[in-house]
Length: 257
Image 1 (cartoon, helix red, strand yellow):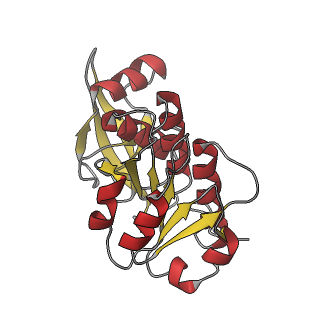
Image 2 (cartoon, helix red, strand yellow):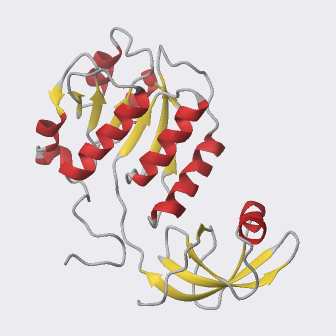
């Protein structure tokens, strides 16, 4: 697959195959035609999380509509089974930041968790997905993370799948992340979930309750410094990708030298 790669990538829900027609959604229409000033005959890249990445040409462009004709494959679909990120919602800008950077770092699920000290009682999951989609388009991944329905911390053990480790980032201490990720039981066969606490820290008894209810849960530490929730999320994910994930894989379409 050596077709020239367009600079613009779009996530679409439609099936992708040569000759297929795809209608851009209203936000994509505005971005393509008014922001980027593209027109009929210009090329973009499309992906849907199932069929790989394809080139497409703008076949029709109107004031409020744009039709794309799928051309040729760029990349085959591949599995992107990254870790899950469970996080206590923070202020809106912080949630946007977490969604964007966690997507870039390869998470396969974003899961809001409400704890005793979570600063907000609501989260906009549509906005969460929109940020994840935009980040996936930018970072050239072939999937968009699943956005799980928010859950109360007390209800998490009943919804946690057997066999998937859960790493609880604990500002009070725990096993060093490097040592935990060196364990084959954590790295395989399923990537772990990383659970990030709220801005105010864990309430007494919360971590112990999760450890009692989830068989593969353990507390981990990222070092001696107290990190903001956003920083802890990204630091934990970066550790996973470098020490146990796909950090040694080349970018899509390239091969190690």
